[in-house]
Length: 347
Image (cartoon, rainbow, N blue to C red; front, side):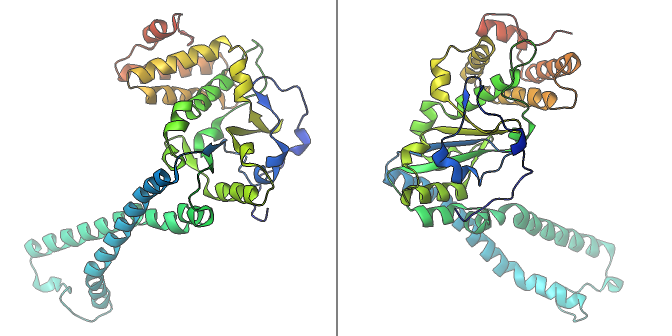
């Protein structure tokens, strides 16, 4: 494949073979051309979108209309305010006009309102340019892939390859493969809880690919074009992209999460408890607390020195305070939902 991403520092010398614990395995070799273009700092989820073509068209029309409306408003605003800014520039260059302020002949009661009005105008247009205008630009012209380029290359198909990539939270992940001295891996448990939430059958079956973007995941438009190209050129069957989760670990290279094998295997206690706790939070509309809890633990465990007793105590306090702000006693809620005492360290 011709397209290449910015390469990260190679760690191929550290890669191992075999000995991977559940639920990890080596990625399918047929996907290697695509994997070589992926960002090692991101986690990727690939699946096949089987929603009807008509449904996909309707879903895609929502951002199209939204971005057209933003672009139209921007053009109207420029048409309205453009002459005003040109007059200001001309005045600054020494050509008096309606915007020229002769401050020597004006009182402060006249100067202050005019300065305030101009400041508000500048601020409004700056905010519009900074926050709204990038939407249609990125939608149509983002260099690392964009929705318009994706649809132009792929069109609308009964079966489409969808590739999601994680946001910045994946940069804080520690070692997901090797267990600690106690035979457990808390980082892996949190990671798998996040993957289970993103790959739940209900989410994938009820939403088209475009609707899967959220605070944790975005779509990799360029990767989706590349994956479709591989299918079209018979380099890979579309079935090869059936629910593939990819994560990079320095010691092992690219790994694939075997969701089928992981589901078939007996879940370890910590992971089962975390999933139960997450489901309980979802039931009361507090799912965001779960992910903020995960982020706190991931941040502390990624710090130099590892996730030792002191950092565990610090993370436990932050988590309890986080839940308390929402009126939830973490330890009590854990015991009610999981049936055991809280796993957080007690000071």
